[in-house]
Structures are given as C-alpha cells and as structure tokens.
Length: 394
Ligand SMILES: [Fe+2]
Image 1: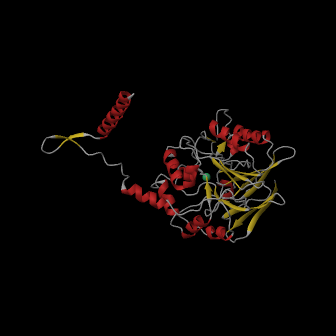
Image 2: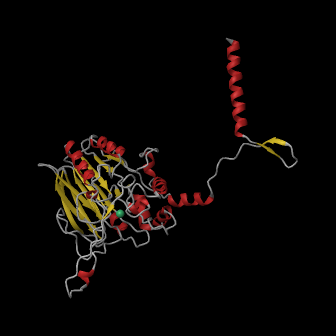
Image 3: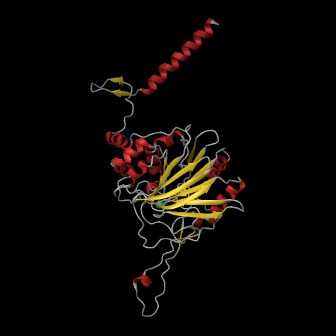
C-alpha cells in the first residue's frame, strides 16, 4: 500500500515538473550559455484595445426579473452622429425597460472605422448615458449595427459585429450561449400571473440573400415631364420563394418554438424588420413568404393569443394588424426612427396599417393594465405627444 502511495506521489511530482518545463522555453543568453527562461508573461491586450473596451463599457442598470412590469419603451434607428432629443423624453416617462430594436448605431459604411467606434460615439451623449444608468435595456441588432446595409448571412463583418454586440450589450453575455453566433435571446420579467416574456429575434445573422428586383421606371406620358412622373419607382426586393431561403436558422426556429411554450401572460416578440406590412420594396418578412408563413403557423399551432410583435428599421411608425385565425388578431407595432426621420413626404398606407404611418422621429411606450389585461401602446414624437395609439387585449 505504502509503495503504491509513493508511486502515485512520484507520478504527480513528475507531471508537475514536466508541465512547468513545457511552459518555459529554452533560450541562449548573450554569453552563449543555455538557460531556462522565466515563465512567459500572461498575454496582455494592447493598450488601444483596452482603451476601446473601457470606452465601450458604461454604467448600466440590470433588470430585476422578479419585479412585475407595467411600463416599457421601445425604439430603433439611432444615428450616433445626429442630435438625439428623445432620450430625455423617454426617461421622463420612467419605463422599467427599454428595448433597442436595431440600427442602434450606424456602422454599416465601410469608410467608418469600426462598429465599436460608433458605440463609443453614442456613449458621448449625456442624455443617453443618463437613461442607460436609470433604465435597464435589452437589444437586438438590425443591418446598420450588424455592419452591412441590408446585410444577412454573407455579411463579411458579421464576426466583428458579433464580438462588439457582446462587448457593448454586456447583459447578453450571461444569456446568449458562447457558441451561438446569432444574438437571439429572451427574458421573462415578472412573477405570478403577471409574466411578460421578451423575445428578441436575430433577423440578420443567418438570413439568406435578398433578391433584388430590376428597377422599375414608370413610362412618361407624352409631353409630361413633371418631377413626380420622372422619378424612378424602385421596387427594391421581391419575394424569395426558395424553400431553403430563411430568415431564422434551423437552431433559431427550434429555440423560438421552445420559448413559445414557456408560461407567460404576455409575449413581446421583437423583430428588427417589419413582420406584417407587405408594402413593396424595403426589408420585411414578406421577402421570405415561406418564413413568414412558418412564423404564423407556429403562433397558430401554439394557440397564442397574447403575442405582440414590435419592429423597427423603417424610419416610420405604424400599427399593422392581421387576423391570425378566426379568434385572434396579431399586431405589429413599428417604431422608427429615434433620430433619423424618414425622407418620405407622404405617410405610407400599407393595407394592414390601421392608420397612416407617422413620419416624425419617435419612440414607443407600452403600458400594461394587468387588471384589464390590456396593453396600451403609444407612439410618441419629439413634441412628447402620442401620434399613434393602440389598445391590445391579451
Ligand atoms: Fe435597418
């Protein structure tokens, strides 16, 4: 027995000595004598990287998921290079959570130095910093903070974007598994029969290429050369009917299906791009009709009557509604942009919109009345007034 213990002890000692030696390197000193160099210093990140990381990280508030939620805000499309007048208005409404629904900074132009630099610029805005310190945030990305305009799975900057997303939205590191490329994640806030599930989709990381349509130029009627008639009407994208084309990866679909089975009294699904509106052009779920159908089928299969979709991207605000089934309506509330208004002169009139779209800068505010089991949604403009309202029963 004693000899066995001695043997084990000797083996451990041998392993320790040999592993120490393997960490050291044999070098020659100036005198030409061979020596064991001291153990290599730990890798130290270059100062510039450390400086960037410290500029990226700002004080922020984490959400207390045990506390019931009665008011939250949402918005999208925030250009870090433009004035940002809405942060103060958002803070004055005291939301318990704010959802950043994508294009949270603009870092898609290749002449921009890096996506991280755009977040650092955003961090220079005092009103924004105040809000981050006071209110917990959750975020997903859209194309411009994903690093490529209208980008999808083939975005060459997706690795950079993914790294920066984790570094900037630090809360997500504890929720999104390390080996997951796409940034979809969720959280259930509240307890008892007052649980709100926030599901943030990633509509970028695995999205198949869009199909661009040829530019349609309306024919000029003879002698008529008014500006309105000479402007080319661009239908940017046409539906991709390929059964293999996707917005969400196989894994994200599987994850979403699992999420929808979790108990919650109200579900908020954030999609950076519009889900319901089928207006020609632009990015939307309708560019992948089979994926859109799959989403609707999934909601129907789970008999979900308590689900509301929120979206951004479009530089307009809108309330769209479709009939999910005989008994259930599905709403898609779009709030965009926080500070980059639409260039359009006329409100958009998609057949699914319940009112003309609002073109001014805006954010969304959702108040939950747990007694009446209803959600009151307002789209609030720079004048601090509601420009669109919608009550949704759940
Ligand atoms: Fe976008």
